[in-house]
Image 1 (cartoon, rainbow, N blue to C red):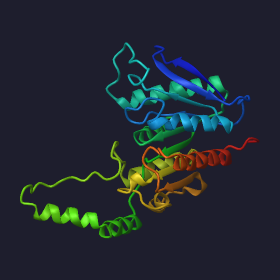
Image 2 (image 1 turned 30 degrees about the vertical axis):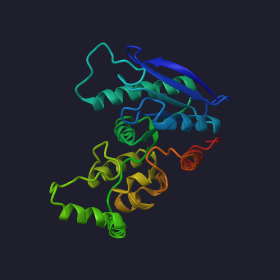
Image 3 (image 1 turned 90 degrees about the vertical axis):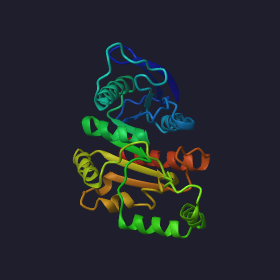
Image 4 (image 1 turned 90 degrees about the horizontal axis):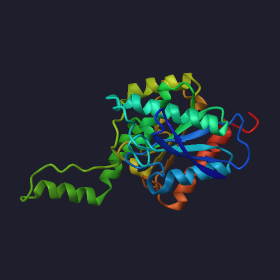
Length: 277
């Protein structure tokens, strides 16, 4: 495995790191493009992107992690950024994907995004026909009856929930309605019908999908297979793989859960793009 810095973009304003296997990767395997998570730069929260990229290289997959314009080491271009951030994102990812293909010799590109990066990956995959796969971590989901039953059961079984409720009801000092933030809300979740339509588009293009969820998503995802259950009208077939790791925090900071995620992603890539493909 070896890593080399890269400078690219129409104004040479984007900075990234190419992580490649020691062996020649000019094969049918795709490369993996890491997208930023919120304001985090290309290292990823608690080094998640670096850890995944290096494990992928050891498994034979090249990758590129880069900073969006104005984030990390990437500067803003001299020309004004477009008012439509989605258009800028798609253009930056297209440049990054082109560099990844050119420098690594990979056939296609798989996107990897955590949280808001997963939302970005969704937008890019829809816009770029060259995307062959997408990994979303704590990204999109849709509510089901099974989710509601589990969610309600968890709340009713929690003594702390009842204590908080009684405190709010009977507190004379403060009668305001306190918002409880549960899970992660760093992006606008598409509604169920929009998500179904979008995933139908991707599946029709033979894009392979890997969705992983940590325990931090309990406010919108709380059991394995929920996404597939919510989208029974979409012919997902073998194109979708779901993983639920409820013991993990949002950034997979603990080594055990991080390795579970990494191993699952590698197994999915190897199954979808075998060496002799």
